[in-house]
Length: 193
Image (cartoon, helix red, strand yellow):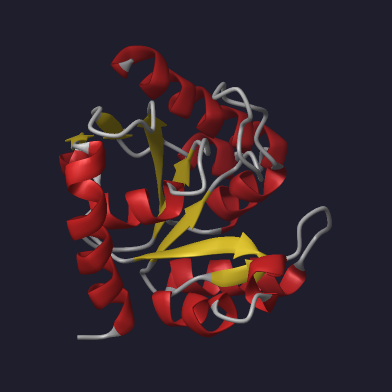
């Protein structure tokens, strides 16, 4: 068992009794092929929560600063995370993400780029749209619906893959694609509160 699967099992054992996950729409998750998983971001625990509720391993983009922390810099690469420099176009992170998608992996993003302080969905950054348009990956929206309170139910909702063919065919902008993705995430939040 590698560190990813060991960590997933451990996190599941620890978090499930505390947050009583309710997973909705797991059947919408493609069983194979590249998947771009786009999720809202409300708490630090979002990556492990999404990681334990998805049916496939996820490679998350994580802010570069985390890879400088003594313990995390050892663990993060072993649990499939890869760094991204925030606030600029990070070509290496873009290449890495596209490569993972083309190889048929799942890449997880929080398009808002940071946690929402009030829990409401913020404007998404163009990176999500870039990956959606530049790959043939299925784009799956996901909503984490709190509250993150002990022994209260925490919902993780997976939507159906977002049709991107029309946007890809007309060479839509990354911003337009991101906006469409965020609309789908907001729809999940609104319909599963």
